[in-house]
Image (tube, rainbow, N blue to C red; front, side, top):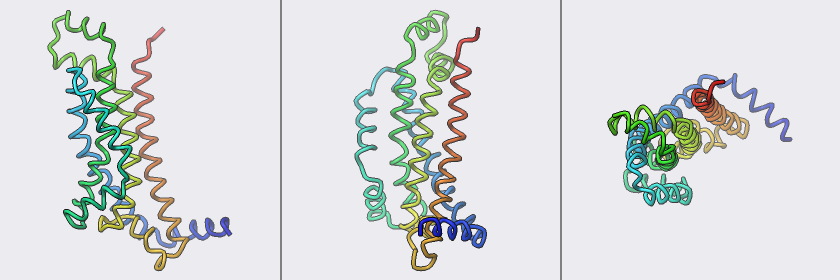
Length: 217
């Protein structure tokens, strides 16, 4: 039965390629828009707090809240206040994307070797130069790890947002009566593919950052 369902799902994909591509594009637009806004908010804040060695309580509180709050509850909250639609769902996804980016960025910069920072300061670098030339490059692998976590989380949750008027593959997953179980599974496979490809790209970037930091013989 399960094997037959997967066979039907893989048949559904080429038979409905146009529909799935369109809904995948809607999902990607929603998820990456929200992720981009979350980066614009959380990354500079995390860099500043980490450089100043302040805001540990803020970083931990945001991280704990991000793990504790159910995704569907946040989406439901914003939908209840703002209504349904692309931007209303994007706001909810931004809230979900901020915690891992902010937390990882803070600890990436805050955890840089103090000797390296003091050496840069002794060379006459300004605080801005220390952040951009020393702390940011050294903390980049951990920052990219936070981006990867946030990206997967936002992409997966964007599927739920589709049920609340955000469009995307969630509309197919929530409409078993119209598309049947094969259609639901095919849409879920497309969501997984988007999440895995994004995570793989960020993992490669993270590995490249590690190699750049590794000492050469």
